[in-house]
Length: 67
Image (cartoon, rainbow, N blue to C red; front, side, top):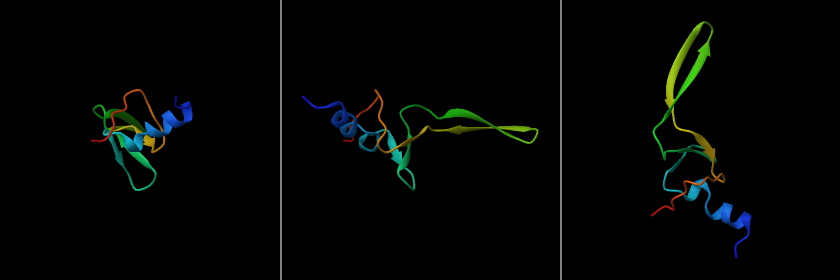
């Protein structure tokens, strides 16, 4: 039986088909559509659509191995 640490490592974001690496060890989870994020600058509020950013060694219950 695998340990919890081994399971988390083998099912990490960087091994998931929904994850797209960025310039560092972080990446975007593209399992679902981007989420609306509000930014308040001075008196203005701007909305942008963003994918969640995760670390390469993060994991979740939606993992699907890369083909």
